[in-house]
Image (cartoon, rainbow, N blue to C red; front, side):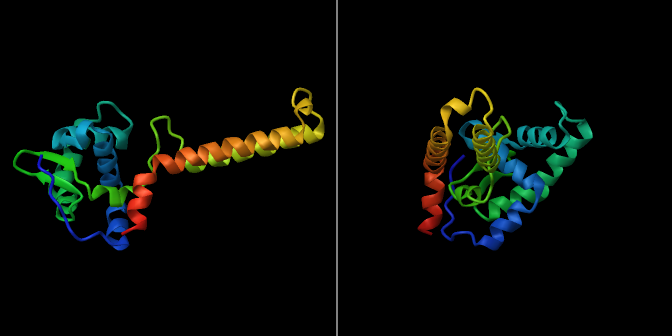
Length: 178
């Protein structure tokens, strides 16, 4: 699909309005994960219905309901805002460059289901519990010492944060210079 250009940046209100709807968020997520960020409306509606119902394939009536709402409401809205290119005749949809403005506000959870917030929380909890175990004299970790355990977790947090910032660098820089 040819990429359309929309000059005006989205304001935060428009972005929050877009992301307020679960079905639109799921549709954007499916398009992000698709090859070349393109799908037919049928493929997109099947994927969204599967995510909504946790059934593969989703029931026929659910797929039909998703198809109709995407075709009549959600995709035209996203197209009008320049986030997707929606060809209603060909029933094809593709993410546009402007979708990156919305992605900044979406927490993209990897396929294994762990968000960055959950990862950092778990890492902090593990570090705290390991430090407490060293202080309480639990065999196996006491030999490491508090300094070694704390240093190890600080290094892991620092490396994780470095990767996190690097992997989202394009989106963060894009928003910063808007």
